[in-house]
Length: 268
Image (cartoon, rainbow, N blue to C red; front, side, top):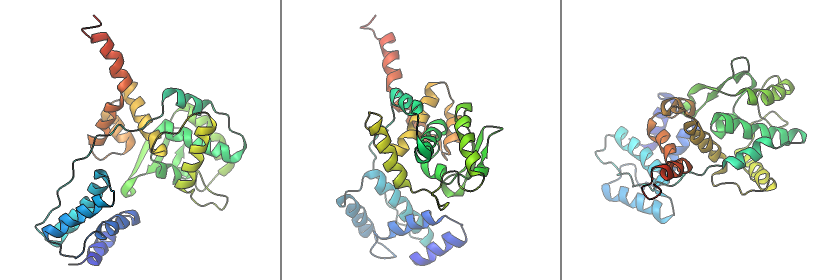
């Protein structure tokens, strides 16, 4: 049994994506041998922590390592680390208002503004947005066909307000990627992140941590706040389980504060 055989099976028999193969490859770099002992597995996790990896990052690599161990027939498994329940970053409602009311000038600023509006309106991942093609946009039925993790496609709704901006953009493009460079290539995530941060600062506020993913968090929180179902939210976001979707309920601090004032014994 070897790493190369494992990766070959995953590629040709399980049809995993190149990103998944890279994920496995990064995890295997922490192992000293292809048949690691319990102590060697522990050393791998200790090495991750010494290098400064957070428990979440370690658990991602551990998941890949455990998949390999199971495939190789090893009885060893690596225990997952306890993760801190951090408050997920979001945009405030006032910041959302500033972003949506912004009047961009020029084609590049208009393209960036549409990306921001699309992320806020649909909750899709940034890579899902950047890989959208013009043909994936159903303007008549207000639906986008996005390709998520593991090449899984799903259809998600969007608003009439987004349709107005989207229709004007599509009129200029006709075919190909919805958002692309002059050469028709996919926009780089880092370039979009840089431009969004610059836009936020230019509009007078500091961008939240994990800026691009914060759009997704903001969408999810407001989806629940406005009466949306957790089960429907799971489908829209493309989560395989409800575990991640339920975390968004913990972000609704303002709602908890308002309710607490009404039920507080001291306030009564």
